[in-house]
Length: 117
Length: 416
Image (tube, rainbow over the protein chains, first blue to last red):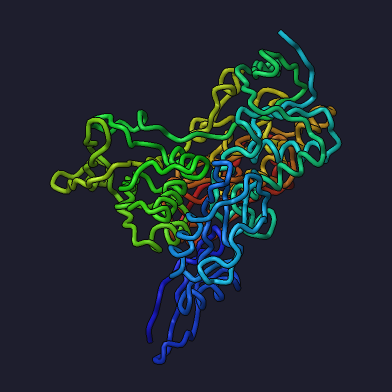
């Protein structure tokens, strides 16, 4: 039986998770989680890990505005997302929630502003 | 000098100041003024563009600017007055606040109550005593964060980080995402001071090595940083000869602890806690100078802004009770710690009501019990799996224990 140790990143508590797999690589148990979100995280992390990307986008006015991916994106796409974020330009005036990039790096996820400028 | 009067003056418009203002307003107070030295409200959250804020307070995961904007909106919706680009330069024990701004010049405010919410700052290079030259390219992690996130400028390309506090970990990821190469994070202690989730998502995700029990012992380069020499340290934190390695880099970021910014507090003569470097306070977050309250990172350094908001709301409401003459000091109980528990906030309990003590431990402890005692009488025992200095803990002191005790001490300690 295979085992994998993870640190849950869902909340600041950072539970130490132990994930066990059967011979076929299927998850049989998750331990160490203080809440249900830990199980969901462990399953995702062992199949298709995802991350939220936060960064900044240059505005037409020359300032930078903080942005994030509206939801998590596949972990292997993080640098592709960053490349598009760095090539993007935001308008001079931006409000929280404004969509800056619609479908970033083919993930189907939008990049949205997280600050007002 | 222009003189004005205010019922409540809040020094600092970061998360603590904003939450204190909202809480005071919601308790019925209207004559409030927030003084903020930066160009906008929001404090350090404005540059903390990463996510992970607000899970406790708002039940959703926000970035720093989003969290700040929620409180800023609450302040603006209520029409609570604030002044930005206004620096408080003096605080007196009679609650006189001297401030200055381009718009107002130097002015004096006679305040009925004052809430200290100035936050903290990073331990600078000069306080670390690292040998070597003094080239460009050495920044605190927070300064680098401001360059990257607020100005859109990268401070360097090849980075070593000293200290594994959360800001250092966050900046390791941020610099990596922006194309820099972070070669190592060195931590003097045998454990990280940062949250476990940040080690996972900021270092492990990018294969950045975390070198525990390592420090920077030499700095190389004349104009610009060229390399640092690091070494392993022994249990007394002395470099071990023969373990030195030199890492070429153009940037060294320092994430070596935060210090509450208490110049004004000290100036007013507020008695301080030598461990927290913040004021000694009671359950209301009132200092030993009547009508002067403190909350947030100026009181003690927090890991989570959610707890800052919570603490600030306590101070905000208590300030209103003080102004109305409703504060009651019915008991006097001090909280003693055993060293393993480094400190508690509050340190003094003056009201017999359920009071949550926030505390930090001095080392990583596994399988210990938190023990609360009055003399020999055990009030509470709480089992723990793991305690670490980087994570703030809480325990609640019950009203009935306090009213029984009335005067004296309760102790908090760790035992097997």
